[in-house]
Image 1 (cartoon, rainbow, N blue to C red):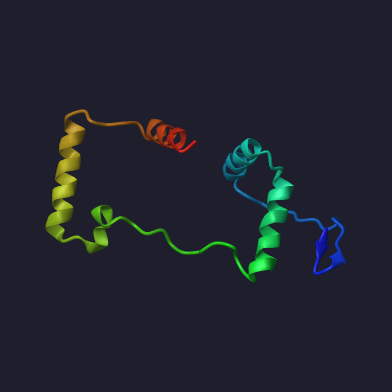
Image 2: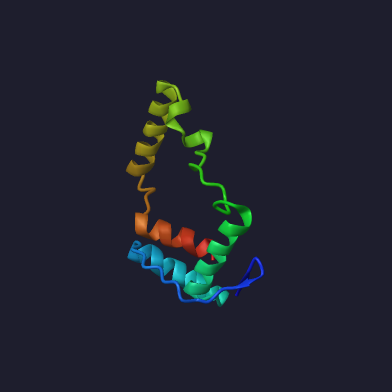
Amino acid sequence: MLLGGVEMDKSGTLNLRVNPTLKQNAELVLYRLGIPMSTAVDMFLNQIVLVGGIPFPVKLPQVPDCINATNMTEGQIHEKLKRGYESYQAGMVHEAKAAFDEFRESRS
């Protein structure tokens, strides 16, 4: 590999500890893209060098106002809780695992 006109060998080693589920999920995505994990890591490191930092914004996710309790009045929070409880009593519930599975499938 060339970097700044200098040939670079691939003898450096990274040993990382990562969440096994996160690693497996990333491997599945990379497999579908046809990219080995080592190539993806090389791509990430090259982008760090090219842009002079992390190649994507690092920030907290924005919470939609409709569910951001910090922007709600006590009455609005109470109303949302009341509606949620009424839905629960009416049997309008979903198991979390099934809901997350459905969400992941919709993003594939």
